[in-house]
Image (cartoon, rainbow, N blue to C red; front, side, top):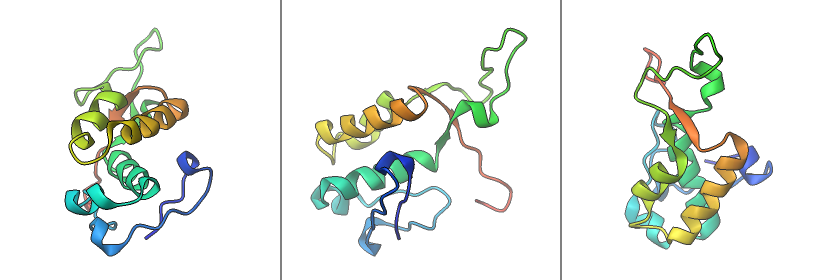
Length: 121
């Protein structure tokens, strides 16, 4: 499985089967694989995990009369907090921070919860 995305400048980053079920609606990388993976694959796996759970609030978050987001699912979720909380125990915090900087450059630090549709995806 590959992870093409703006986060990686359009490059394809392959994730091996050992990384986890990349076809799951909510990707959850295998921590034991993540600990020993090359940094680029660690970042790709962390991004896939994040992107299957959170989305740009502009996409699906309503606004109030003044144009502010109205987070209905407990957000906003802070990319830096969420990524470090999930991955600092199995990826060097410096590598996690590299992804945080990339994610913040795309949308900012505030993200909305991505809802799964009724078919599970």
